[in-house]
Length: 588
Image (tube, rainbow, N blue to C red; front, side, top):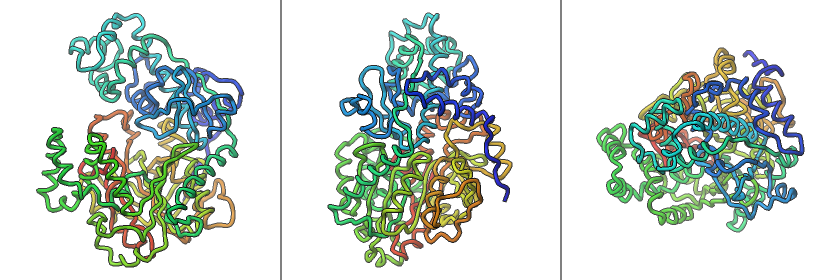
């Protein structure tokens, strides 16, 4: 196998990263504008029209959905790891408003004026946040320049919602912004109620973000990780879960995937969910349900539809949330929310407490159910982290539990050879952080997923590259990897495998080596669904039809046949994805 050549200092992506790392060493705030030149030179595949006068709607949607609504008012962004770090600099963030973004799970606090405090779990958060702010500022200022000398002020002041604007006025606004009418509508749909307030804010002033890093040492990040684990460990103790002694199966997914298949709540609520869809006029979903019911091959995947519809049902009926909590308790699932530091939720699931009569119907064929009842093992499921924080979290967990029995990683990725919604299963991962190429036996294969797919393809035996960030890629970057047969670009697998290496070998993970993990004494399962196709310029989750993408680009809900394998050893059913429009889980 040919080793990937490390990036050189002159590489435009490397140069951009080195620029902001060096600037952030200062104790003063730095302006985002000082990063724009090196950012533009990078020619990010996620911001293909950055240099153009016209607005890059896809890049703006992508960035806006991953920043809180209050970002329109903010001029200063503070970055730190723990409450102590912010308070050390007299920023009493405990008194600030907690805010969130629809497309990125990150702890943030707003002071009500012009400051936003952002918690970082690793340097990968910085690699994600800074390009996003830069892209947002570039597109903001393009729109400001287009609106500054226009006659759109009266139009923007008169309406609060897109539906109130006449077609002629919409066309005139699109012409003023130098965008296609359909792209302006797409931006409005993505931003919802924030669309008109955003345009008014943009017209009023140029954006000039300033950044200040309050602390950024490796010790600070590890301190934050230690506090996260202490909260998980201490929250589990009153329930009799001694995580320091138990065999543990580690899952990195989200907070609804395992809940769906282990509690059976959505299946039990089937009639109520369907009644809600009728009452709410969800005709497209009802038509899809009729298709599932009329096809014998699809009917067995009815739970996936219910997992998806449950999210809509819950949003309209707040009482459902409490019933779901009760369902978790009945199955012994302990939900643990982050109390301090970064925002990564966790679930502690003792396998012996699972109710076999409530499991997803496709799991009830396990012949070794009695082994589950006798198992002493515990599943620790976490909200998947970003980049290097995956290494920090798994390294910390693996050194503090009784025995690590398996690591199962599920997340989204860009595909260089597939379509949005496809499922990709690698057995080779090149990690840009360590420049290692990891070879391993993936315990999940196409045979485990295909029975639960009704749209899209399942591609196993693939090669993945763990990139620094979503914006930190360009066409030259992707061409190099594609020529070497790499077809998946994602952000967590490499750091997780570095932590796995340290769980089975007597030294820290190496750098710039080909690393074989075939002899690892645990399951390693990695699976992704395709959320982006970067070879189709600008084609990402911010670029498509929002309704369709929300339904296709969801996070896991369906189990697979491989579940029987770890169960025979006292482990959990390995959760499997079914990412397509007819296989939706509980949430987008």
